[in-house]
Length: 272
Image 1 (cartoon, rainbow, N blue to C red):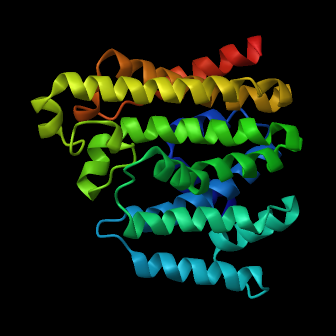
Image 2: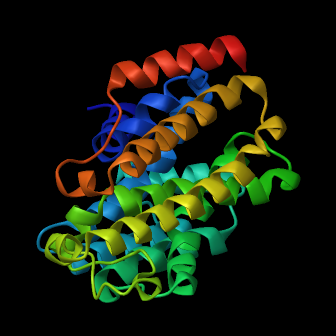
């Protein structure tokens, strides 16, 4: 399989919503986005494996640092990301923060407070926004909005994936803000009013971050704004579905169909 296809398929398997949105990027940028997400999804796959593959993850990290030092990994995912990092001059502390967050998934399953959630999201999501900003050639003025958009998208994933994260014993939402001891279906059904209140509060927080991020859309060139706005619109749609019935997270994984993503992208191409 050619290298470009490896990165594309790794990205597609890990994030169909964002993958289909990025198809609206011009070809050169789309290829670089695939390089970025190929690396990100590969690292995530190690910590989300059943059972978790801590050894595989640490081996990947060590190989990455060797490649950064000039020893080729002979791995298209790692070597591709190192080349991408050098070409766009990614700050190494961004990658370090990302790898730290992935390592937290191995050893810290519960983030009880908002401060703990924010610490995790900086590495798992906000730095992805910074990587993307560098790929798109955005000014430093756009960095705050880029971080917030990554944070907002990650937060809606936390809400959407409650049932899946329960299987790992993980809680990413600040459970200390609720009287519920955890976010299991049994606890939620035992106190449905509190579960709805808690989820609606988290959705309100997400919408605040999303709106603040959208204020930075004007800093993105139109040809890049289309896929970014399309992805943001799809996460907003997910939030609206969950807001209508928070218990839907226990029945299915709320994701837009490919047709909805494509139609939204076309509409944005005509209106952005």
